[in-house]
Image (tube, rainbow over all chains, first blue to last red; front, side, top):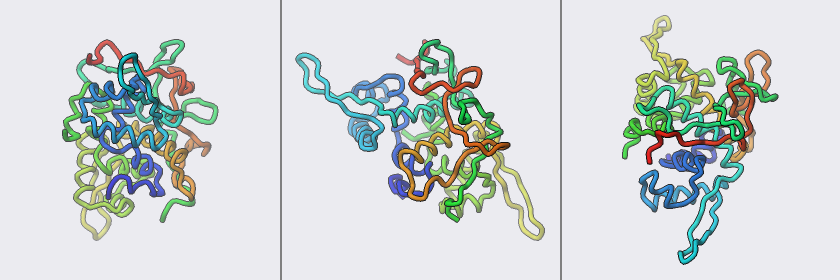
Length: 152
Length: 152
């Protein structure tokens, strides 16, 4: 089953992966959160083929996760920049969740290459569950509960 | 490049995906968070081939994300149950992050099939960034910052 077929699933993890689950896509988003916007910047950092990068960025634009904007430097041809939309910004918790898990459970000898911090204070932040008031709820106090529309 | 090669990357998203990025793995984890423990339960819910399921569960056990335990019902042969380890539990924010994004941006006509709530109160919880005191930090106040060991 191709991954795009998951789009119609009743499972929202599957639907999200129908857009995000292709190889490279989450790594492109990781770079976008670090501030990368340019095609050549994504390509050189990830070392990926231009046609695949173009395809993945196209999927992200089609799904309103990124926007594509033309820009032109003096004396050069028109190029394109890619920026995260508000819907794309919401994926930061997914990327950061993968990152903090990898940094703890599959550590690299040099330590973390990217950290997340509060803009004003530079204090570290992490991904967690919160309640309606924005207070952390410990992992072992969170239940995943099937609703009445869960397929039986 | 096979996905397992990402294991040695300096990028922690890549390292996490070296274990989690194979097809089906995140969907297996989704079911585990809903309480599924049995091979046949995973297989019938996901409709996947037994050999692929066996391979994916094996990877999760090898990487200490799940444990495999024998159990036996009277008059039946020995079977195996799979339970999340504490390291596996930490992946709940990743699965829930994909789920809440899909429920908002790729909604299903029937509504969410799984919701997350606080065990004691059944109040809804969501995934967010928090500071050291466990207070939510808004998305637009979080920066991803490259450290001194980021490869140049």
